[in-house]
Length: 130
Image 1 (cartoon, helix red, strand yellow):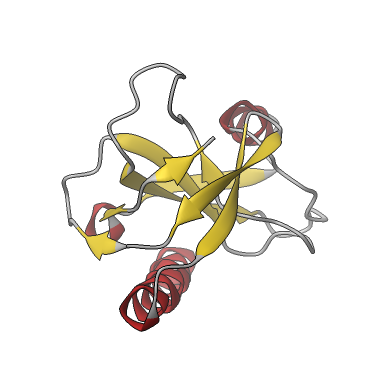
Image 2 (cartoon, helix red, strand yellow):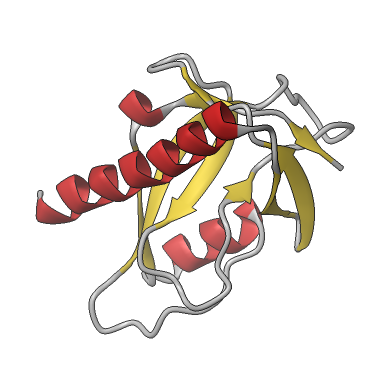
C-alpha cells in the first residue's frame, strides 16, 4: 500500500510539473519509445480514467530515466497522447536500470524486478512528435 501511495504521489508531482510548464509556455520534453527518444509538446491536461495510450512512469529508476510511451504517431493505435498511466517501481533489493520501451517494462516485470500498477486518476493528455 505504501508503494502505491508513493507511486501515486510521484505521478502527481510529474503531472504538476508538466501542467505548470504548460501554463507558462509551450515547451518540449523527451520520452522513451521503443528504445529511442521522442519529443513532447507540453500541453498536459488531466483526463482521469480516460487514458487509452499506455504511459509508464518509473518512480525510482536510474539516472537518465524518462517516462516511457507505449505508442507514438505511426506506431499502432496511437490516440493523440491520451495517456493511460502505469506506475513502475523497482522492487526492493533490485538495482534500478534504464528502461526505454514498454517491452523492457514487461521483461522487467516478468523477471520480478519491477511492480507495475495502474493509476487511472493520473491519466492525462499530452501529444508527442516522432
